[in-house]
Amino acid sequence: MGAVLPHAGPDRDSLSVDPARPGTWLKRISELSKLQDMNDADLSPFARAGGKLLLLHGAADELVSHRATNDYYERVSDVVGPRGTREFMRYYLVPGANHANFGSPAFAASWDSLTAIERWSEQGRAPVAPVVVDAGDGRARPLCEYPSWPRYRAGDPDDAAGFRCVRG
Image: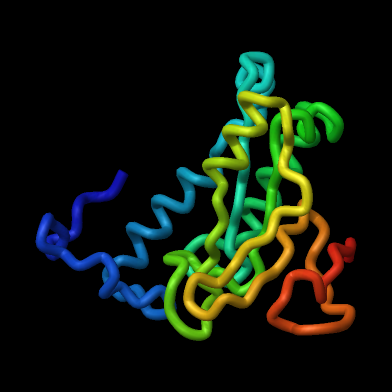
């Protein structure tokens, strides 16, 4: 692991790092990205223990590519099997949401995932057709299970009902 940067510390405002121009943070971000890319895809022990996992990633994340999370999900599915994976894991790619989940024009995704995971783990009720709402302006989108994606079909473009989850 690399050395701590000289300007890092408890007084450092992490929100001042511009993801598009990380400057001296580029090396550290790259090192941490390598660690993330080494995630173990065998979640069988977690699943056997009754674990449930809701995985979300903002499609507009400027620090960590959603493609890395897509790849991880696919590797889990390859190891555990598609049916086995679906028994304990749901992955949603959130349209417009960025890394820090705020700022215009980003979609500040808000979803009660705690209640969703409680229902799934305690009552066996997996999420069905969840909706994410922009905490900033109230726009809503369906959370589509990966690899599906919300496609506008008709009606109010700010209402999740105007979208359908489609593949490809």
